[in-house]
Image 1 (cartoon, helix red, strand yellow):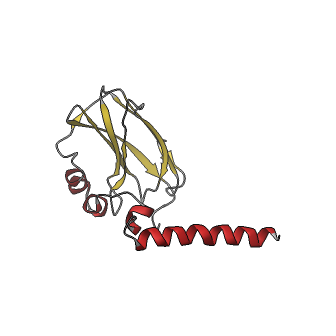
Image 2 (cartoon, helix red, strand yellow):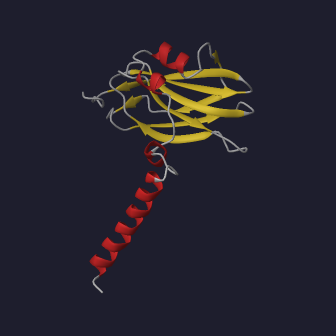
Image 3 (cartoon, helix red, strand yellow):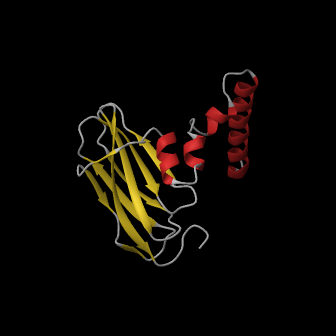
Length: 156
């Protein structure tokens, strides 16, 4: 049998099974593609509103949040960010960029004793504070560092 045909038949079978599950009401298309997300927080246009809507409002400064970002990012489209929370009981870490059109970048959830560490790349529109917010023990904490961007990343 032709390998291309075999691959096509396997894919068609998978898509058919998913279509039947959706039709039977066992799957909702939104659940299939992504988890629920806080649209209001992610579409906020200033960092205060984004933090408030993501339930990080009124966060206290903490030196127990370790942020590793470059002082100067040569390309705002790919700025590396590493965050470690030394705060006991950390359940969430969120990333905000003050000068982006939509400041909320990501919100990571940790469960079952997972190590509160993230490493990712983000887009930055221009020189700005990279603000990290952490939830631990029912309280919110924050820490920030400035990153100077020399080439724009979000449409720049």
